[in-house]
Every structure is written in structure tokens, then in C-alpha cells.
Length: 200
Image 1 (cartoon, rainbow, N blue to C red):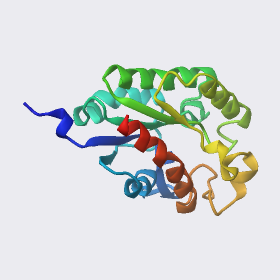
Image 2 (cartoon, helix red, strand yellow; image 1 turned 180 degrees about the vertical axis):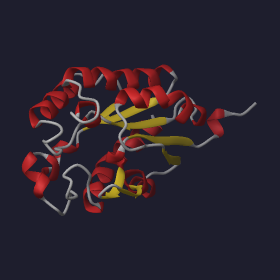
Image 3 (cartoon, rainbow, N blue to C red; image 1 turned 120 degrees about the vertical axis):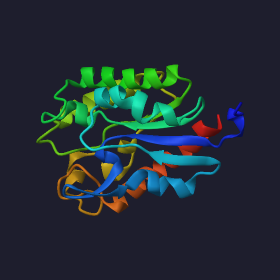
Image 4 (cartoon, rainbow, N blue to C red; image 1 turned 90 degrees about the vertical axis):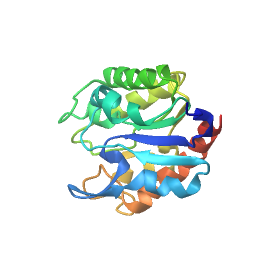
């Protein structure tokens, strides 16, 4: 029998292209997980994120994409909201997008996993109105008991307003995905929480 306690904990990123480094529609690597990995100790980092996914789709694929490769006590870093609300993808209200996000987290926690999720950073308002984004974030932060930790990148001045979308240092031209500099900020914010949750 395998002694699960002797296996390094896994930190699994599962989300959509907000975890990716992209140039237009071209995938250039798993940005956040790659930048986080050197900051963590005693864990193995994996990334099963895929573009265009909503929370409901991520939940549906969880049994085949993630579950076979994790053990109790491993950490899931989950990020959506944006795609679930986007009018060209999920087209959900903020309330229903949060219901789906919470359902994803509840499933993972029921399997003995730990879950970290993130609020929605400002994004191209053609697809998600800023009012909807703020409503989603406010409701998520009002009660974080549905997961082990919520990380709020909107506390950073680079992601606290739609005015930030035009800052090419941190945002790509599509005003959805980030540059390496932008993802570095996300990774640096996430790393201490991931380490803490993994060690708990």
C-alpha cells in the first residue's frame, strides 16, 4: 500500500486561459504555475488549465482531467468567474457564475482536496461589464467559507480598476490576458497562500 503521507503534495492549477501566457490566440505556456513553482517548497506543481473553460465545464471534466492525479490533502488553484460571465462564453449572471464556482470548490473539498480561488481582475468590458465583475467579487469576498482561501489580485494597484486595462506593461492588447509582468504579480501574490494552505 502507498503511504500517501510520503508523497509530496501536489499543487494543481485548474482554470482557463487566464492562467496562460498568450500572444493573441497563441498559447505560450502555463504562466502562473511556472512563475509560482520556484517560490514553493515541498510540493509538486501541475497545470491542467485550458482556454475557454467555464466553471461548469471545469467541474464536468474534473473526474477525468484532475481527480486521477491527486490525493487527499493536495491543493487545487482554481480561477474562473470571468469566462462564466463572459457574454460570448458562459453568459451567466454574477450570482449564477458564483454558484458554479462554489459548486466546483465543493466538489474538490468533498474529495479531501484543498481549494484556493481568485477574484476576477478587470477584463475587457465588451465581454464582461465591470459592474458584473465587481458584483461577483463582492459576493465571493463576503463569504469565503466555501473554500480554503480566496486570493484577491484586485488589491494590487495594477488590477484595481478598468483604467488598468490600457496599461500594456501588465495587460495584453486583448485586455483579457496578462503579460509576463502581470502574471508575475499574480504569482507573487498567490505563492504565500499556496504554501500556507499546502502546509496546513
